Image (tube, rainbow, N blue to C red; front, side, top):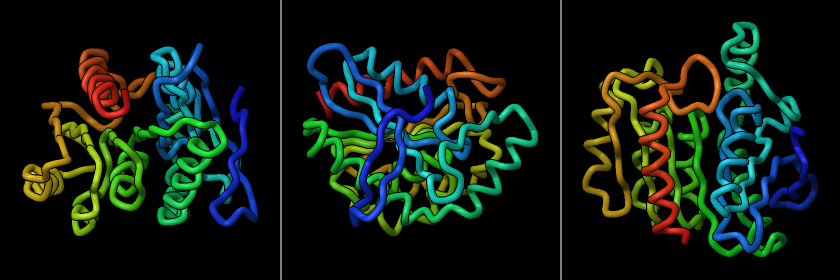
Length: 232
């Protein structure tokens, strides 16, 4: 199963696919899982399934639906990695945030779950920051978000808790960018940053060559505690 649900856009003139994992019984809250550049692939769907096992409704919207619907790519296959880079280059991030906002509305109005958080990876980590700044989401987590230093002018709009996981040897996030993130966000009352020394981009992916088991488990435990505190 890849995408098993549809969500109307904010304008209501179209809809896009999503993968939804439901918990047993009444959900604690809902969490939007924001894709990497590889789409709603098996790793992202596995993230959703794990969150559902913890009692959350987990929803991964297909943010590349206008470019290549139901994108599902493997980062360890070179040709698919290059396809992902091409899609990222064409992707309109502002439109993506509108689709994430539409997902928030869908969860609250259609699924009937009031508390909504998000967790994003890679591109999704950047979008998680943007979601925290541009929507009324209740809590946000970003893993190895790219280019967040260029978004710091939006930090004043972050009204709800945000956590960012930063690997110090991220090939896509230079040390200068990491330093700018700390300088701009360390004193923000709603933002928490965690560094992971010596680790590279993608360390918390569910599958594939990039995963570092110990660090992934540490980061995920922090994320779980964060959502338990702010989503219930």
